[in-house]
Picture (tube, each protein chain N blue to C red):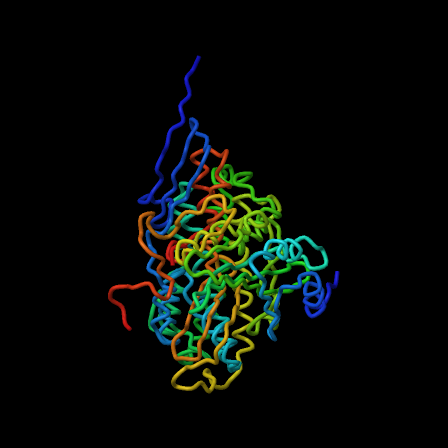
Length: 365
Length: 150
C-alpha cells in the first residue's frame, strides 16, 4: 500500500507569482490543495491611521500608494467622496479630464494584469508586449501631471492643472494605435493553446458565490454578473458615453482574463468619446483654501480597475478627517482565495491567483 | 422588476424592528442584539434583496465604537448604510455577519485586527494585517504611536 502524507508548502512571501510580498500556506495531498491559508500584511503601512493626522488635501498622495497600478482611480475616488461630503460641484471640463485619466489608468492596470498573467502561465513575450504599450500610457500621464506612477493629479473640486497643449491629440493617437496592440495580445496570449488549457475550466467562481463573497470588478463580471458602477450607478459624466460591459460565461480564470481584455477596448471607446465631447471651461471648482468639511460621514464607491473602490470618510468639522476607511477591491477579492484554491492542483494556484489581479499595496494598505 | 422606494423600505423595517433609529440620510442604527435578524431580513426578503455586503468597517468615537456596514441591492439598485453602536469600550463585541455573507469574513478580521472589536460567531477571528503578537489596536484613538506628526 502506498503511504500518503500531507505536506505543508510555503508559497511566498518571496515568490514571483504572488505579485508582491504575499504568502500562501498550502497543505498538499500530493499535488492537490487540501487547504490554502493566505497570509497578507507584509506591506501594511497604516495608511488609514496616517490619514487621521493629515489635512484632507495631504491624503491624496497616500491614495496613490494603495493601488499604485491605477492611481488615478484612487485619486478620483477620494476626491469624489470629499466632493460629496462638501457638496462641491466639479466643472464639466474637469469631469471629462478625469474620465480620460481614469480610463487610461484602467487600461494601464489591465495591461499589467494581462502581462503578468501571461508570465505566470509561462509566456514571457506577452508581458513584454503589454509593458511596451503601458509605457505609452505612462508617457501621457507624465505629460499631464509630471509623474509616471504616483500622480496626485486629482484635487478636491477638480484636477490640479489643465491639460498641456496637444495632449488630446496624443491621447487620440494612442486610442487609434491601441486596438491593433490588443489584437496582437489576442493572437499572442488569448489564442495560445497552452494558455487556454491552463486557464479554461480552472478556478470557477459561480455567480452566487461571487456575490456572497463581495467580489467585484472583472472577477464578478467574469462570473457573469452584470455589475459595473459606470453603468448601474453612473457617476461623473459616464452616462454620456456609449460602451458595453463584457461578461463571462464559464466563470473561470480565462473569463476573468478576457473580461479585462475586452474592457480595455471599451475604455478606449470611452476615451475617444470623451475627447470628442471635451468642453471648454475651468478645471477647478471654487474650493476654500483650508478644507473644513461639515461634521458627518459619507460613503462613496466608484468602479476601480480591480473592482468597486469605496471611501468612507468621517469628518468632525476640523481640517483633518476623524476616520478614513477605504474599501479596497483587491483585499476583499483576495478573501475568497482560500476557498477557491481547494481541490485544485498546485500549478493551478498560480493561474487562480493571477486571475484575481491583486495589488499588494492595496491589499495591505 | 421595479422595487419599493427606499422610504417605504425604511418605514417597513422600522415597524418590524422597534429598536432601530433612522436619520435624515436614511442611515439605520440598530442595537447589536437585533443586527443579525435585521440583516437577514434585508438580505433574504426579496422585496429588499440587499444581497451584497460591500463594505464593513468601524469608527472609534469617544463614548462608543460604531461598526458601519454598507449594503447594495443589485436587483433594485438601492444602497443602505447600517450602523451598530457598541457602548462597551473595554471589551467591544458585535455579532458576526459571516453566517450571511462570506465577504464579512476578511472585513471583520480587519476590524478585529485594527480596532480590537470581537465578532461573536466568526469562524476564524485572527489578526490579518498585523503580526500575531502585535500589542494594541492601532486604529483606536488612544493608540500611542511613535513618530508621525501630531
